[in-house]
Image (cartoon, rainbow, N blue to C red):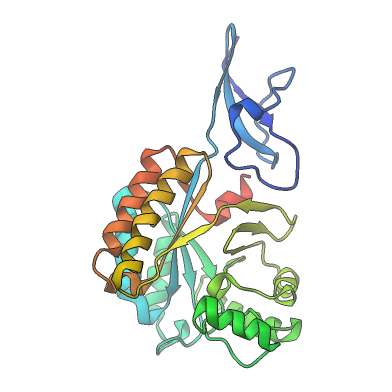
Length: 300
């Protein structure tokens, strides 16, 4: 018999059970070819004469570079170069509005750099408009945004109209820069329910939060906690860097979704870049396959 891929759907649920053990799978009665549209596929096996041998290929690694803007051009280039050293793609989270200076529209040279990165396999995502929270929304949501995202939770407390206005402005700049995209990550990973509704209406296909990635078209979630550094010095920074590496290795070894979120300010602290490179290496060595959020959602 000719070899071929066999599809195993772990539970057919709306959630992506990344990390399910082979023993949990229900093998189909007959082997079948992989259907790219089958979003329930998380385990594959190779059909051979005499039987089926299971091989888990569900461990994924998504490296995202946050706060991509003209003000962070040098840091963005550094993180991209580091990713190139591993031969992996990254998801670039672009702030199209003014952030720490010029906006994307003011720097066509930087937009050209981003277009080149996308042509090479990287993903481009919108990362808010200005990456700064305003006075909108209720005080509990504003307080949460300040506590979790240090004032950057721009979409955490917006209503539908406020979110839609910011999305229109962001989409216009991205389109004019040749960087149209349907991926969105809110600053601080915080978006109000109304903001998420505005994302769907605006035609965005996927978004992320602290706990995973979400397909806005189907509601399907891909569970995986975002690991990021908290620059600040002292023992807490060192402990966090050590856990960054440990959790990346552990999640990959368990067949999970490893999400490493890199920020420009990480490069201004000694040791954090080294910890990041060790975390990427640990995840890849443990069997994770590097991908982007766009690919994760499309091939789920």
